[in-house]
Image (tube, rainbow, N blue to C red; front, side):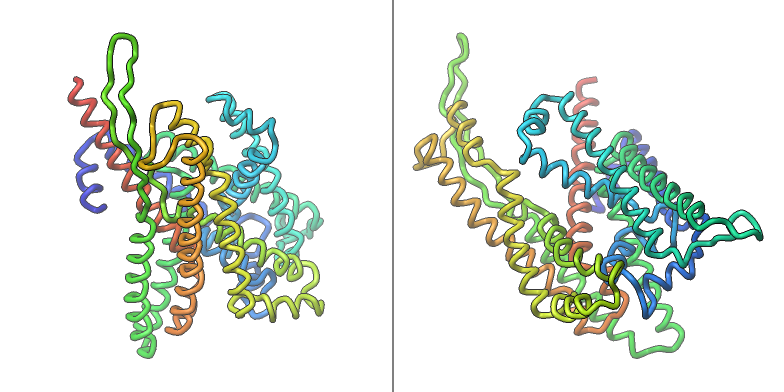
Length: 436
């Protein structure tokens, strides 16, 4: 990957794109440190990370993914979370509502309309999340915002809500601009930079404590880095693993020309669903706990739920595993259509060795997909559970939240995707130079 980056900097057009991408990412990181007018940052951070924190591990995880923007009460605190949630909702609705499914197959115009629906949904979710934050942490609002005279709390809350929503939409705009004029998927890169920033801050905090004389943490830090390297290597190896189904195309006659048949493959990745099953599973388990912690923090139901289904409990791990398996099969059933692929193969004269075209091909693909999905879901369970247990056994404190299972997968996936995009850009540049 580093060799690819070095070679990319030798090409002027690609170098300019990389520099533009870095400039936009820098603007995003600056926005993660500019506090929202109307919130007392120290009080807000204490409300999230203090002993009597409201919101539990869920908001702490959100803060680590956003690079600390939420804990800083920054204008970009919501980040791209509303847009990601909106995109997931719209994608699920595309398969559930026939009108949206037809729209998704209507070419560029249809995709533009679906993208517009995603933006509208993201705006609505941004307002919902901003209002929930303002209502829950209204004790941290600065009612003396406009001078010594105390302002109505509803006015300050409304201003904070609008600023948070505007910050979320601005973050999404930055992501779009990176995709348009930079390299790679902008939204993914924003999340990538946020996770790395949180991880870097956590590592710096541990190194600072060691430098101040706390030598007990040096071996913990060394063991943590060694474990992290092995875990990253395992994730990269599994993420690149795929099953290649050989396909042979028959000779075709078009007009007066005969085209020779060719051999190709249908690649099916072991982890084709990415981090989506983990995100869905964790959201379903933690969402009831989040609601109860926000609205009924002293109730008996909240205490029971936190004790039995709180993060780290054995029941939590078992339920999380079953949900990851379920959502892996669910997501792959939406994104991979064996009967459609078998139909396309048959229409284009392609066959899988020793398998009849049509129904048998679809059944063969479906059988292979189920096996791969099962192993892929087991891989996700291992990634979701084992790293956290290893880090807790080492006793790394704040590094556990910074290097969450979801964060590790996102970092690896985005890094590999960025490397592929760079290679694609260089190939395109070479072809253009050859044509000139």
